[in-house]
Length: 589
Image 1 (cartoon, rainbow, N blue to C red):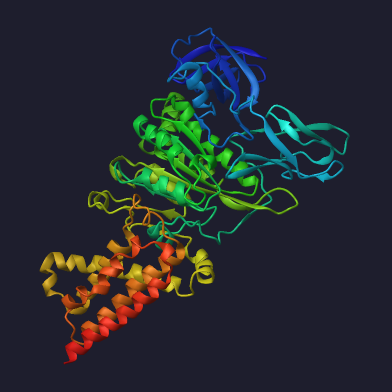
Image 2: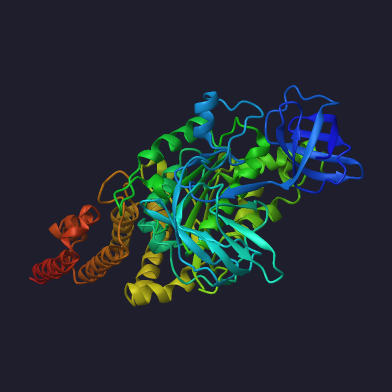
């Protein structure tokens, strides 16, 4: 391999000379310890390298060896249940070998080379295969079957394919190309993290990613294969929301990337996730989860690579035909890593010191999401939904990372510290948040839930906006000055906030609400509001309407088990009609 020499060291950035034949993004080994780095700039005979490890002790004159390969990840059975750092080093394996801290220069195979996997072919020798074809399956975990794919760029005739027990280093078959070249097929393959995996075509968003969280599914839905941003200050509940989405979203695989979060917060995720239960199968959630942990005290360059590692793994499972959800927590810390490296490179700073290409890098990352038809003649569909948390300083979403994120994502869940302080969770502000997918998804809701879904949601949003306007008047003149009809509007809006939008992640029933139950709950609240306004117009006292027994039953809908069936809502509507009729008769008398 071509060797060069270190001429300058500036934090994680190293300048080397003599790397003849070096190319952009080639992986290199620096110094006697062989620290992993990547070429990020080439100027004549000089190569600028970002090193993914602590460069303490590296000095001018140390050797630099070019591997000739770009930064890539290994993809194959064994990814699920794994915990990696930003450059796909398995943290659990490294801990067993070297303790709680990663020794510099220490590497370990990303996939267990000793584990044997039972491979079952789905193709026969002599069949023609194309890129993306499934040639066999491996039972990776009880929750997921790993589909062994023909790598992109490989096409020909299967000349060998054998069932049996194999490691990720063994060949299970062979493809003979049209020009007679023999290409081995294994259980694993490698892919460059900065290059999106190819697809046949992208599809428009038309199916929602059901999460079971009412404020999201009803008011601000995200499409399967869509993009969403969760900006919020410290303590506003970003991590809890992401854990709820990981647990309940209708995704086959979850990839959680902790890029630059505080060590104690990441530790909480790493200790809690292995004990979470998949609610649908009652199996450990880790059996369909991959964690990538790169805390704020880990090398800054590896943090920059971590989101690319995560999205590449997500694309791999998408190519099998699975629905994948990727949680990035948080892209602000990733952008800070980008800013630090840019400063070391002495690049011209942009707004607030971030590099001028911050917006492009964010767009490139989020553009890798999507609902797609994957490669292969079967026309399988898969998706990657990207949900990125943003941690703006002081909760100020006007800063560059938040603004560039909002330009490329189509859903904005604005977390509000004042709601969190009032113990209203999820603390998503219904006046500041938005989803640009609602128009695309309304036909799905109309077909699979109810035709009146869109009108109910729009009515609820209007009531909450009307409440915000009336609250300004109330603060000036007091609520007693309002007409009874407008007091009824405030009461209905309060029911939407407290009995619908507020949802406990720790209540075993309220933690998840099916889409059918969401519709019936919202319909019951709005029906109550209609009847209340009508009754007040007929002279009924608002205080008496508020004290009706059916009002308490509506408040308890969220904790009513779905096993009781949706028939309970029919009974509730009957009681509502009867009790309002009684009140109106009393008022008329």
